[in-house]
Image 1 (tube, helix red, strand yellow):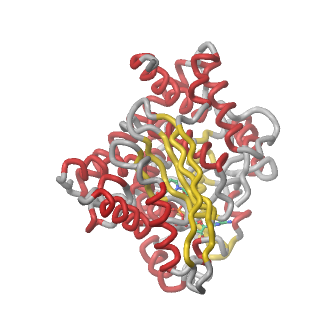
Image 2: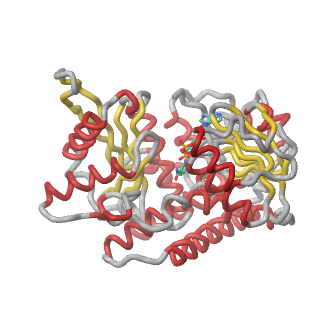
Length: 432
Ligand code: NAD
C-alpha cells in the first residue's frame, strides 16, 4: 500500500508532498495551533510520540526456516487515558506510518471523548502469504516482545488492516498466560466468547449512519429518501448500507474491488448481502446494472460514502464528484488536493476521524465491560454509541461556527480534538 497525502484540516493546503505520513501530523498540529491562536511551543509535545518501539520477531516457518520479521508499537499520547490503537499486518508497515496512525488515534479518541490516548502497532508482513500456524506464532512472539508495554491500563491493541478477532484472541491468550490470570481488557475487537462486545462488528457502520443523518440535518436535508452511493462493500460499507437503507435512504450504487452495480430505484441490501456471501462480490448482481468504481464516484447523489481505501478522491476526479455530502467511511479516502477542490466547490466532507469513529467508541465500551466483568445488551451499546457520535458531531459543528471555518468540518474536527488534548495537558501540568 502506497501512502497518500491526506487532506489535513488543517492539513489541506499545499501540494501533495508528504511521502512521510508523519509530516501530515506535524502540519495538522501547526495549523490547529494557528486556528486556536496557540503559541506553537504549546503544541510541540504532540509532535513527539511518547514512546516508539521496534522489535525483531524470529518465527519458525512451516518449511523449517526461521524468518525474522520487524514489529512496531508506538504510544503517541496518554494524557487522557491509556493508549488505544490497532495492530496492522501489512508488507508496507513502517515506523513513520505507525507514528502517524498513533497520532490520528489520539485525535479520534479525543474527538469522540473516550478516555483513551492514541497508539498503533504493526508488523511488516503479508498475512495472506502465511499459514494459520505461522500467523499465530508471529502474533504470539509480537505479543511477548511488547508484553511489558501493553495492558488494560497502559496500551490496548485492536484489529486493523490484516488482523481480526482471531489475532486479538492470540494476543489476549499470550498476555494472560504470561500474567498468570485471564485479562480480557488487554485488547478489544475480541470474539464475543472471550469478552468481546455485542455491537462491535457493526459499530463503524452504525456510527456512519448517525453521522450521515446528523450531517444531512445540518444541511437541512432529510435522510429519508436520500440518494446514497457507497464505495466498498466490506465490513464498513455493507453495514452502513444495511443501516442507511433501513433508515429510509435509497442506496442506488455500491462497489467492491472488482466493480460496481447501480439500480436507480434502490438496491435491496439484504438480498445483495446474500449474493455477496454466495459469490464473494457484488459484480454480476442480477437486479442491477454494472458500472465501474470511477463512474460510481462521480454519480449525482445526496451522499457519497467512500468505504474502501485511501486516495480515492483526488485532483483527478474531485471536480467531477456529483455528491452534495461526502462521509468518509474509509481512512484517508480524500487526498489533500482533492479535498481543496471539494471545499472550493462547496461540497461538505465529514472527515474520517469523526465519521468512522464508531468502531473505537464500541472498543471503548468493550474495554469498560471487560474491566467491570459485566456485559451490556446490544441496544444499550447502540444507544450509547449514538449518544457519543451525536455529541462529537455537535462539538465539531459548533467549532466550525465559532472559529469561522465554514463547511470545513475537517479543520473543525482537528481543532476540537487538539483543544481537548491540550486542555487536559494544561490541567495535569508537566511532570518533573
Ligand atoms: P474490508 O476489507 O472489510 O472491506 C473493504 C471493501 O473495499 C471490500 O468490499 C473491497 O472489495 C473494497 N475495495 C478494496 N479495494 C477497492 C478498490 N480499489 N475500489 C473499490 N473497492 C475496493 O475493510 P473494512 O473494515 O470495511 O474497512 C474499509 C475502510 O474503512 C478502511 O479504510 C479501514 O481502515 C476503514 N475503517 C474500518 C473500520 C472498521 O471497524 N472495520 C473502522 C474505521 C475505519
